[in-house]
Image (cartoon, rainbow, N blue to C red; front, side):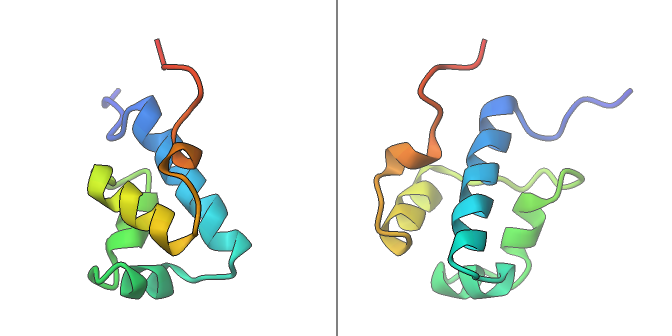
Length: 80
């Protein structure tokens, strides 16, 4: 069995971004455009089959776009 491409915390962040994106009715392409990223980046990040993930700079930019705290994208407790 292959190892997961994303850690638990990476998957958590990606799912939180997806929640915010869908609440705002933004497509993956629309969010990528707001982030000045390639058209497929968000889709790759949201795919469990891709190793693409977000970094701290991405999380900061998401907080600016969604007008919220960066803390909204992180879990309250660490993963063990």
